Image 1 (cartoon, rainbow, N blue to C red):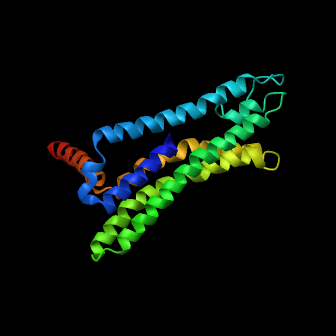
Image 2 (image 1 turned 30 degrees about the vertical axis):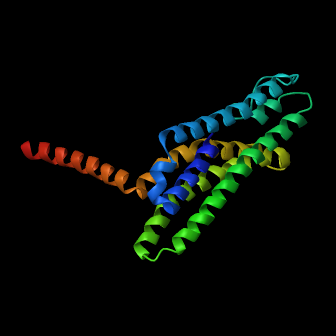
Image 3 (image 1 turned 60 degrees about the horizontal axis):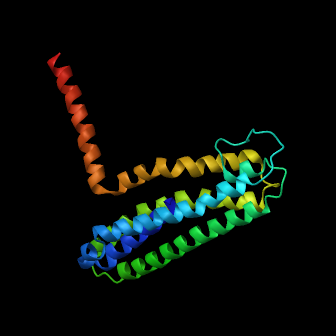
Amino acid sequence: MESGVLMLMALDRYIAICYPLRYSTILTNPIIAKVGLVTFLRGVLLIIPFTFLTKRLPYCRGNIIYHTYCDHMSVAKLSCGNVKINAIYGLMVALLIGGFDILCITISYTMILRAVVSLSSTDAQQKAFSTCTAHICAIVFSYSPAFFSFFSHRFGGHTIPPSCHIIVANIYVLLPPTMNPVVYGVKTKQIRDCIIRILSGSKDIKSHSIWKR
Protein backbone atom coordinates (compact mmCIF):
# COMPACT_ATOMS: atom_id res chain seq x y z
CA MET A 1 0.00 0.00 0.00
CA GLU A 2 2.92 2.34 0.73
CA SER A 3 4.27 1.75 -2.77
CA GLY A 4 0.83 2.46 -4.21
CA VAL A 5 0.60 5.74 -2.29
CA LEU A 6 3.96 6.85 -3.68
CA MET A 7 2.75 6.01 -7.19
CA LEU A 8 -0.47 7.97 -6.67
CA MET A 9 1.55 10.91 -5.37
CA ALA A 10 3.61 10.89 -8.57
CA LEU A 11 0.42 10.92 -10.66
CA ASP A 12 -0.89 13.75 -8.48
CA ARG A 13 2.28 15.80 -9.11
CA TYR A 14 1.99 15.07 -12.85
CA ILE A 15 -1.57 16.40 -13.03
CA ALA A 16 -0.78 19.38 -10.77
CA ILE A 17 2.20 20.49 -12.88
CA CYS A 18 1.12 19.48 -16.39
CA TYR A 19 -2.62 20.26 -16.07
CA PRO A 20 -2.88 22.86 -13.27
CA LEU A 21 -6.12 24.44 -14.54
CA ARG A 22 -7.88 21.06 -14.76
CA TYR A 23 -6.49 19.64 -11.50
CA SER A 24 -9.68 20.03 -9.44
CA THR A 25 -11.86 18.62 -12.22
CA ILE A 26 -9.64 15.59 -12.87
CA LEU A 27 -8.91 14.64 -9.25
CA THR A 28 -12.36 14.92 -7.73
CA ASN A 29 -13.15 13.44 -4.31
CA PRO A 30 -14.91 10.35 -5.78
CA ILE A 31 -11.90 9.66 -8.04
CA ILE A 32 -9.48 10.00 -5.12
CA ALA A 33 -11.64 7.67 -3.00
CA LYS A 34 -11.79 5.06 -5.79
CA VAL A 35 -8.05 4.99 -6.51
CA GLY A 36 -7.37 4.89 -2.75
CA LEU A 37 -9.71 1.91 -2.37
CA VAL A 38 -8.12 0.09 -5.32
CA THR A 39 -4.65 0.65 -3.84
CA PHE A 40 -5.82 -0.68 -0.47
CA LEU A 41 -7.49 -3.77 -1.97
CA ARG A 42 -4.48 -4.50 -4.17
CA GLY A 43 -2.21 -4.56 -1.14
CA VAL A 44 -4.56 -6.71 0.94
CA LEU A 45 -5.31 -9.25 -1.81
CA LEU A 46 -1.63 -9.73 -2.66
CA ILE A 47 -0.57 -10.10 0.99
CA ILE A 48 -3.28 -12.56 2.12
CA PRO A 49 -1.73 -15.57 0.26
CA PHE A 50 1.46 -15.18 2.35
CA THR A 51 -0.54 -16.32 5.39
CA PHE A 52 -1.75 -19.53 3.72
CA LEU A 53 1.62 -20.25 2.08
CA THR A 54 3.31 -20.02 5.48
CA LYS A 55 0.61 -21.97 7.33
CA ARG A 56 0.86 -24.98 4.99
CA LEU A 57 4.55 -25.54 5.84
CA PRO A 58 5.66 -28.18 8.41
CA TYR A 59 7.65 -26.67 11.30
CA CYS A 60 10.25 -28.64 13.25
CA ARG A 61 12.95 -26.09 14.16
CA GLY A 62 11.41 -24.33 17.13
CA ASN A 63 9.48 -21.08 17.15
CA ILE A 64 12.20 -18.47 17.67
CA ILE A 65 12.55 -16.04 14.77
CA TYR A 66 15.92 -14.37 14.44
CA HIS A 67 14.34 -11.11 13.46
CA THR A 68 12.78 -8.08 15.16
CA TYR A 69 9.34 -8.68 13.62
CA CYS A 70 7.46 -11.50 11.82
CA ASP A 71 8.97 -11.09 8.38
CA HIS A 72 7.46 -13.58 5.94
CA MET A 73 10.68 -15.27 4.84
CA SER A 74 12.07 -15.35 8.38
CA VAL A 75 9.00 -17.31 9.47
CA ALA A 76 9.13 -19.57 6.40
CA LYS A 77 12.80 -20.41 7.03
CA LEU A 78 11.84 -21.98 10.37
CA SER A 79 10.13 -24.71 8.36
CA CYS A 80 11.78 -28.00 7.53
CA GLY A 81 9.81 -28.11 4.27
CA ASN A 82 10.36 -26.61 0.84
CA VAL A 83 9.95 -22.80 0.89
CA LYS A 84 10.58 -22.35 -2.83
CA ILE A 85 6.93 -21.44 -3.54
CA ASN A 86 7.03 -18.83 -0.77
CA ALA A 87 10.19 -17.30 -2.21
CA ILE A 88 8.82 -17.28 -5.76
CA TYR A 89 5.50 -15.73 -4.74
CA GLY A 90 7.26 -13.09 -2.64
CA LEU A 91 9.50 -12.23 -5.57
CA MET A 92 6.50 -12.04 -7.93
CA VAL A 93 4.66 -9.69 -5.56
CA ALA A 94 7.73 -7.46 -5.18
CA LEU A 95 8.25 -7.29 -8.94
CA LEU A 96 4.55 -6.85 -9.72
CA ILE A 97 3.89 -4.08 -7.22
CA GLY A 98 7.31 -2.44 -7.29
CA GLY A 99 7.78 -2.80 -11.04
CA PHE A 100 4.36 -1.41 -11.96
CA ASP A 101 4.54 1.45 -9.46
CA ILE A 102 8.10 2.44 -10.41
CA LEU A 103 7.13 2.36 -14.09
CA CYS A 104 4.22 4.73 -13.40
CA ILE A 105 6.47 6.98 -11.27
CA THR A 106 9.15 7.07 -13.98
CA ILE A 107 6.63 7.94 -16.71
CA SER A 108 5.06 10.63 -14.50
CA TYR A 109 8.36 12.30 -13.70
CA THR A 110 9.54 12.07 -17.29
CA MET A 111 6.44 13.98 -18.36
CA ILE A 112 6.90 16.41 -15.45
CA LEU A 113 10.52 17.05 -16.42
CA ARG A 114 9.51 17.76 -20.00
CA ALA A 115 6.82 20.17 -18.82
CA VAL A 116 9.13 21.95 -16.36
CA VAL A 117 11.93 22.40 -18.89
CA SER A 118 9.49 24.00 -21.32
CA LEU A 119 8.44 26.65 -18.76
CA SER A 120 9.67 30.13 -19.61
CA SER A 121 9.75 31.39 -16.02
CA THR A 122 12.77 30.45 -13.90
CA ASP A 123 10.76 30.92 -10.69
CA ALA A 124 8.11 28.51 -11.95
CA GLN A 125 10.78 25.94 -12.80
CA GLN A 126 12.35 26.22 -9.33
CA LYS A 127 8.96 25.90 -7.65
CA ALA A 128 8.09 22.80 -9.68
CA PHE A 129 11.46 21.18 -8.95
CA SER A 130 11.13 22.02 -5.25
CA THR A 131 7.68 20.42 -5.16
CA CYS A 132 8.97 17.18 -6.64
CA THR A 133 12.22 16.97 -4.62
CA ALA A 134 10.43 15.94 -1.43
CA HIS A 135 8.56 13.18 -3.26
CA ILE A 136 11.73 11.86 -4.88
CA CYS A 137 13.41 11.73 -1.45
CA ALA A 138 10.45 9.77 -0.09
CA ILE A 139 10.71 7.32 -3.01
CA VAL A 140 14.44 6.75 -2.39
CA PHE A 141 13.89 6.27 1.36
CA SER A 142 11.12 3.72 0.72
CA TYR A 143 12.28 1.66 -2.24
CA SER A 144 16.03 1.30 -1.55
CA PRO A 145 15.84 -0.73 1.70
CA ALA A 146 12.65 -2.48 0.56
CA PHE A 147 14.16 -3.95 -2.59
CA PHE A 148 17.36 -4.90 -0.80
CA SER A 149 15.35 -6.73 1.85
CA PHE A 150 13.13 -8.52 -0.69
CA PHE A 151 15.87 -9.63 -3.09
CA SER A 152 18.56 -10.46 -0.54
CA HIS A 153 16.29 -13.09 1.05
CA ARG A 154 15.79 -14.77 -2.33
CA PHE A 155 19.25 -14.49 -3.89
CA GLY A 156 21.74 -13.70 -1.13
CA GLY A 157 20.36 -15.57 1.84
CA HIS A 158 23.55 -17.56 2.51
CA THR A 159 26.15 -14.90 1.66
CA ILE A 160 24.65 -11.90 3.51
CA PRO A 161 24.92 -12.02 7.34
CA PRO A 162 21.59 -12.27 9.21
CA SER A 163 22.41 -9.10 11.15
CA CYS A 164 22.57 -7.21 7.84
CA HIS A 165 19.12 -8.53 6.89
CA ILE A 166 17.71 -7.38 10.22
CA ILE A 167 19.30 -3.92 10.09
CA VAL A 168 18.07 -3.23 6.55
CA ALA A 169 14.60 -4.63 7.35
CA ASN A 170 14.37 -2.30 10.37
CA ILE A 171 15.48 0.62 8.21
CA TYR A 172 12.77 -0.34 5.70
CA VAL A 173 10.13 -0.30 8.45
CA LEU A 174 11.32 2.75 10.42
CA LEU A 175 13.10 5.13 8.01
CA PRO A 176 10.25 6.14 5.64
CA PRO A 177 7.68 7.01 8.33
CA THR A 178 10.40 8.80 10.32
CA MET A 179 11.89 10.79 7.46
CA ASN A 180 8.77 11.57 5.42
CA PRO A 181 7.37 14.13 7.89
CA VAL A 182 10.81 15.77 8.10
CA VAL A 183 11.23 15.86 4.32
CA TYR A 184 7.74 17.21 3.64
CA GLY A 185 7.95 19.59 6.58
CA VAL A 186 11.15 21.13 5.22
CA LYS A 187 9.99 21.34 1.60
CA THR A 188 6.36 22.39 2.14
CA LYS A 189 6.08 26.10 2.91
CA GLN A 190 2.72 25.88 4.69
CA ILE A 191 3.94 23.17 7.08
CA ARG A 192 7.26 24.95 7.63
CA ASP A 193 5.56 28.27 8.40
CA CYS A 194 3.12 26.58 10.79
CA ILE A 195 5.96 24.90 12.72
CA ILE A 196 7.87 28.18 12.89
CA ARG A 197 4.77 29.95 14.26
CA ILE A 198 4.27 27.23 16.90
CA LEU A 199 7.92 27.32 17.97
CA SER A 200 8.09 31.11 17.99
CA GLY A 201 4.83 31.22 19.95
CA SER A 202 6.20 28.87 22.63
CA LYS A 203 9.36 30.97 22.85
CA ASP A 204 7.28 34.14 23.28
CA ILE A 205 5.27 32.51 26.09
CA LYS A 206 8.46 31.43 27.88
CA SER A 207 10.07 34.85 27.52
CA HIS A 208 6.84 36.52 28.74
CA SER A 209 6.69 34.32 31.84
CA ILE A 210 10.37 35.02 32.62
CA TRP A 211 9.75 38.77 32.17
CA LYS A 212 6.79 38.65 34.58
CA ARG A 213 8.96 36.93 37.20
